[in-house]
Length: 271
Ligand code: HPA
Image (cartoon, rainbow, N blue to C red; front, side, top):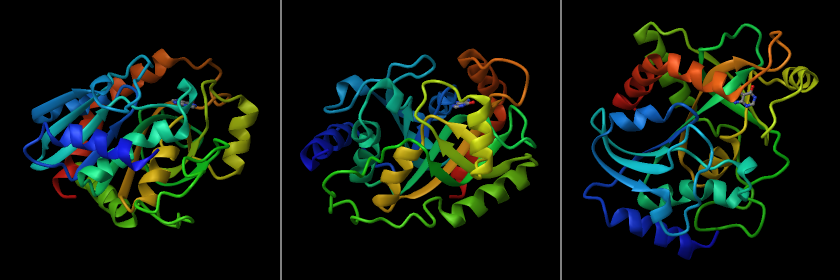
């Protein structure tokens, strides 16, 4: 995506703000409620922003909410773009570069994911310690945008180690039983087969979803400090003897809404 488009998008956003956000939030399926907690919000529908794609999936709102949360200036994406919707990897990650251009330094990425680790339970929250890109594509393929980062970005601690420790401490202080583990990004839109889930477990995955990896890759390239939180909305295919549905995913994220909100707000308070 060329710089002109990124600058036009971020300028459009900037022109509606008095204070610039420093923390970006990407809110996954069923987790958009966090955006409703932002005070004195400026709400900008994606369709108004130059070069922004539009969100199509149920449970996603498709707007930016910018304002104050726990004393910090934040910019939240209520709804994200998924590769399986047919967007290119560059479109999926465009908002991350727009946030970087706005001056955002930290990115909190959330998602709903299937639990691969059999010690997990639906409704658990998981701090992402690392990921496996199983999408067969990468948003940084193509000419490198040197203004954002290097040709061959280091990914050895793309999930900021201090943020992981900080999130663990917040969970502890709140008495929340929060898991941690490796997130595998698949393209979707199908849920996995049981054989694929066994494979992903062998490969070291703890949770699997259809997002996050592209955004975090581009955020890491741009030098943003990233924290990832998954909501384990279901056990991945084949673990329980029941089919997977999107409504189950949404129902579970709604059930853990309070824990999720408390957890993220605590993290932001002292980030
Ligand atoms: N697999 C992939 N993506 C998901 C799942 C899953 O089981 N649950 C929520 N998103």
